[in-house]
Length: 493
Image (tube, rainbow, N blue to C red; front, side, top):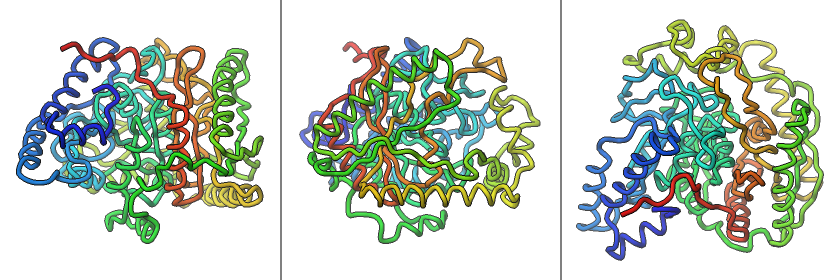
């Protein structure tokens, strides 16, 4: 199952060489061998106990008639932030260890309707932040288990990288799809904010939250987006998608998409990363990034270099305003939820020490505060400024490294120190797309001298996913940087 794609699996099934049961069993065997043993990635929170039964039913459907749907027997690992009515949904917290929702999230419904199997729920950073959980400890990077997997979709990223499923679903508020994908040599798409329904997902900041695919190939990400994108009356913001969705995102996957494309290079400033050690880590990724820019040129792109994100009033304001209100509204929808408010959760104890500390500033904040208005004005000014940069330079997309530094080491006191210093945000360029609510896709751009993956991120205007898929596909096919981690090799037979 190493590096299998949706197309590979469907071709094997059509030829009679593979059953859904055997496919799911192979992934379950890999999870058993490597997630809690061996490199102990800790990427899987809950394995679906009915996965093989669902596989058997799909085999029966396949024998009787055509496949169930476009994702027939595609095993998916879903971030444990999305509700599943047949498995616990823990949000990374021991406080919700026994909580089973009464409904599926819209994304889960659509995956299942398309024939996919939710093979497992992925471990997530507690309440959608970082890579540490009170429910499972901390997630490890599949390429070096002593390094961070990024977060908070770190479990999804590590599981997909390690070939524990065909594809994965993550959630991105400030970078939680693209970060794990970048440091795990995967493809991660943060869609345009209204494109994918968030119904049935624990929110963090609703004006930034979105779900999206983490996969090993650009083509698989496009196939997943075909299924999960679109209007959902339970998430009214998705009404913006009417008239914006193509027949298939797969139609954009052409090898020559970068020829004559004008790609602007954003060079980000990281004033907080000022130590000698930081400079060394930044330099390691810079080498890979410069090579990626050369690859873009070789693939026919017109590269416009050294653009800068302008300094704008309000840039230093963080979005602490939405979380408590959104969390309380969400929990109020669930009579069987063990806690009903963010304050209740924090007062109960049990939340990871560092996460409890980072959640405290959200308490008693409100979207009615004047400072929230200033933050909203900043984001709109940022959109206009980036649109102007793209218009003035006639750009089709912008590009930058998802992280300008490689994944940091996991500190030994990660579970005990509420003020742990782990360099998690070193070289982080993910917030730009989140603040714009524009789509961004990260794709493998190679490995550092320490054999750690780095991601190249393409950013486009709202609803420009087809164009971004084309650029990412052309880069992927022209460079072939993706390779599986050596920590989780093929199992012996």
